[in-house]
Amino acid sequence: MHSFFLSLDKYLKNNYIFFLLLLIFFILIEEPSLRLFSSEIHYLGETLRKYNYINHEHSSYIVYGSPLDYRYLFDWITIFYYEITNQNIILTSNIGRITCSFLFCYAFFHFSKTLEIDLVSTLIIICVFLLMNQQIIGGNKLFANGFQSTTISNALNILSFSFFLRNKYYVSILLLGLSTNFHFLNGGFWFLIIFLGYFFTTFKIRKSIILFLIYFIICIPILILLLNKINIGNDLSSEVGQILAFRSKHHILPFYSFEYFIWWIPGIVMLILYLFIISSISENEKLSKKIKLIITLVIIQLLLCLIISPFDKNYIIANFTPFRTSPILLLLIIYYFMFKLIKHDIGFKIRMAILVPLIINITYPALGRIVFENVDVLMGNSSDYKSELYDFIEQETKDDDIIFTVYDKNIIDLELLLNKPTYFNWKKIPSSSEAVIEWWRRYQLLEKIDDQMCKT
Image (cartoon, rainbow, N blue to C red; front, side, top):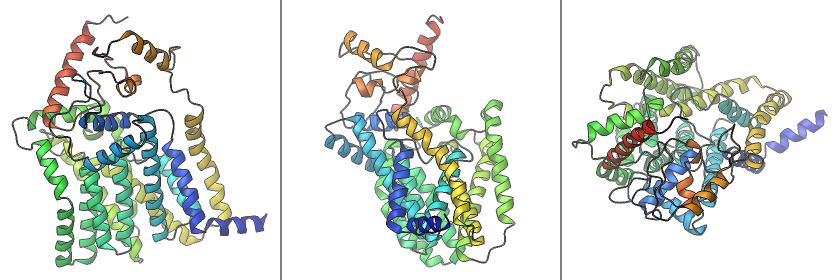
């Protein structure tokens, strides 16, 4: 038995095996299947609407003006996948998920190699991260959320941080620029964090300016598109800010109400606790110091945003979704503690004993959702099926009929699958100012309709 574990340990240290098994694991947790995630329904659908694959006047995907906006790179990839799959939205999403799996696999492989962490320890890190719900505060996630621009951006951010630890600062900045072009806020926040980390590590003013200019040049396309689409400073900006804050209050407004604040308390306590623990650890290694610095900077950023939040009456800070750094922060904290633990030479058998129950806990439900879940069930206590409902709608409606689903969150993929306008959906918040105003008008109209409907 001892020789078996020795052979297995040696086998798993092979780089090709490491990468392949990690890739299989990521594909599994990204859950390729016949169903669409809610985020995919939002972002893939909006892309198709912008490029007139969906062209209903009363579509719930509300778009005005040029199709180019600050998700332009993601839109182009989506359209490419959509065309090569003969305009099959399910295949498009699954190819996208596999793409995200590959990007995450490479980012984590690179990061673990930077810290000299093996496959078993890397899988333990990811499993712990998933079981901790992937974030500390804010409700954002890295994995298992479908094919979307945020996912690609997060993978690039993790890879950028790995290059930062290797002192490959130009490569790190290039990746952050690319990340920002996929998702302005995701890439932008992590650029600020890593840029400050570089400055406080080296105190090289000249090179810091050069790195900033390189990043700025890479981000010129996204800045132009962002300013053109958002129309910052116009007459609508204040109203749009309030609508966006109301729509995304669960992500950005911890003090919106007492009930909301209760759900933020554990995360706030964890932030303070992590800051206290990490600050009390003395460091001698350069890698540990750099990870510790970045973790400290992000915790301070999040705590400052929490302090500012109740005073941000116009939602200027809130609408930059400042708590979206939380998922990668949690990941870095787990990596940091694993990096410290492996210095104590934890045996392979012990690590395997830890990994096996964790990986079963993660992969078995994911595999179940892929293979066995009846994705047609509308509600847990309902005997109706989406396929039957969708067949009925397909047969009983005309092409120009508008379908009001009101607030049924279980059928938000109806428009994508049936190609029929659904007028409004809470999830599908648009990306331009004028479209946000129209989304709000439709929401208020649906509120009136809902009030008049028979409650039984």
